[in-house]
Image (cartoon, rainbow, N blue to C red; front, side):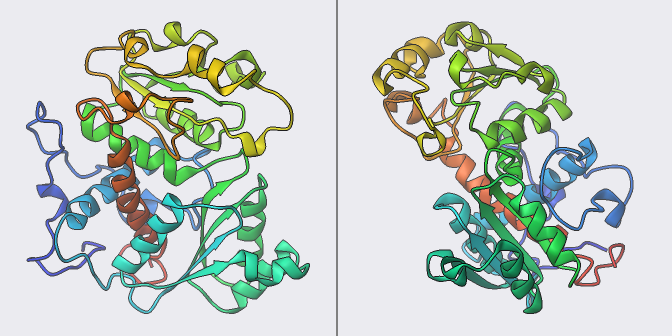
Length: 355
């Protein structure tokens, strides 16, 4: 039995969804292998590290069906009817927070977003107390973003002691941002078909980027060759231990790349001068039309946002219709988060094969 039961007129099943790559005419089959909860046995989604390739692929497959659903006029289902989703963002966010809110609402959940600036956290409440209080309200899903690495693992540990509630990491410090990596992978797969043999260059502020860390692990797990391109001051000293190829010269790092993922300078995490100036940074590491010619002719350009135009990327590149997939990433983000909310609550909902 499918875990998603929707009106046939408002939903196209996954097996009928074509990839957007016009050169690929075959339908992508459903994930073969184990069924039900054995495909994704995790209670939480806290990091890409430790996930099996088939678990990643399963989430991408599940997200694919929601892409088609979201392009219809009717975008409301009752998949999560009666379930409560709390969004807890300790850091500012636009795309990720709105994406999770929209994803939960479209699935029919009762969505509540906590305003941390007006919460008891500002009165001295500890993170553990916040987690215990939220768990006592018996939510089914808690989506958390926090400025400290590891904070969301702590919240998940506390919540798990009280209730079987799924916790999703929406970004913690420099650590990880798993749903961003998943939506990036979905975007790439819809354009390139497969990850095997792809050369993907992730460029910019690698040192402070949780997006880079999640993408390194996910893309290599699926068979891609991954490069890290950054100034020496923004390159982690242990970068080779992560299994990626480091480059400190932008043109060399872009050579024959199939996909280029640009990262912004995260100045809010910088304590000291990591680059002489943004103008000089753009001169040496900004993605311009001329520099992009070092990549393959059919290169795909991506950026997790927010973009700093004229700092890490030229507007002419960011807005190039046949090259840039930046707004498509935002669209894929809603589908990926719908899939995560759906999958992580299947046991609670008593879905056959998951209960």
